[in-house]
Length: 517
Image (cartoon, rainbow, N blue to C red; front, top):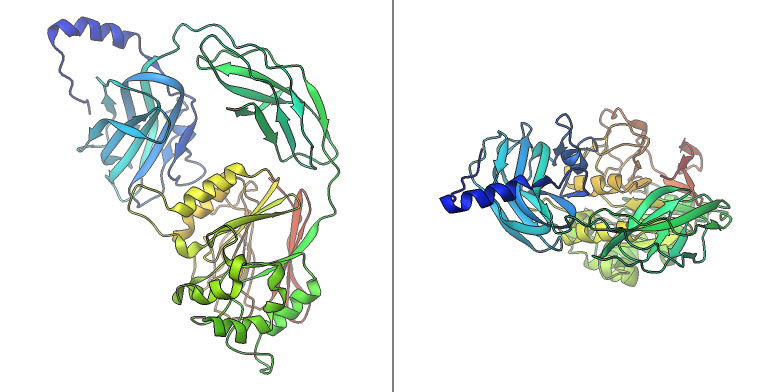
């Protein structure tokens, strides 16, 4: 489909000259997306210059978007979309200077899935965004390539910035090194700095500081930085420095479970949560994680005091909880009142905390629903920023509703975006409840396929609530049990290993020792 452009005769020659100077601006540039269908269809595939790789959004949801950072301001004259089968009937092309506030450069209401060549545009900015509004199929949005043509503001700039000086390291931890350096100068302007570790670029920073993470304890690394301008000119590398990381810590042990306290006490032989609380006591953890449905059935404060508090309540001071769907039935009032400040340590029922070299992310999956509006849910915005700010080498997340499960409730699609974000940010461990059973998965990718680069998901809804029947196991299921028990998590600065401890004190499942991504 070609966008109609009307030019006066006197303007044709000038327009042709301008268009002749256009260059492909988008290829290989950084891309952000609202969602991806799987790790095989990332946004970068839409600007890699290949018509055999593609971006695909999550299926069945509008709107969706893909944003390209051109790296510098440019005048946009043309955008070409080479669609795969999952095309857009209605969409917009938008442009922005800051990546936040966008203006519409083109609006298409009659897309037919053919190659869309949108010429005659006069937009200007650094960021170009496709916004899919109405899908042409039941799937998502997918194109082989998105190409942006135009002219940059820095055409003809060939002068490189000056070499950064004063590179220095702060206090190194076992797995991270903080770096700072002096600002470089340029005739047009410095846009960023490449950080080199042992001679290879590991990051680009927009500021004169960067913290390198995920390192090995007691190991020496050599660092240098170089400046970059908008035209892609780079300076010489700075004088290198060598930094040695600190020795690793001895590690720590956590206890975790979800779906815990039925309305019963230890006076009843069939009451399980006092028995699982005894397991926690024997584990003697540094902290306790709960994965929701801490108290049944529509828990009030009195329910928490009468049941949960009499068993798991003894660990309240070291507990980092999240709510489940049962806490939501009473508007979270009992949950909030019982746990007090630890229910919302950062003002919301989702938050993060740290221990050793681990970054833990507590999420409220009740708050995550599929939104029809373009604006993303606040919790997703927060999660993206929290992951971006993390400087620890290992990441674990926990929330109630599992993305993958062979239990009674099965796979939960409402958790798709949470799971995909954690996969994309190389999380190591994801803990869930909701299904009253125990299931440990092999590391998986966004599609739920076995992938050593993905997180290990464990459904640990075995804390005391009546058990559910099991469905057939997933292909990636490593262990599936209809049993009560508590997870024992053994963490070091670079590894983790998990066990399920049954109410008789026996080890019912042992995971391998995994190395953090």
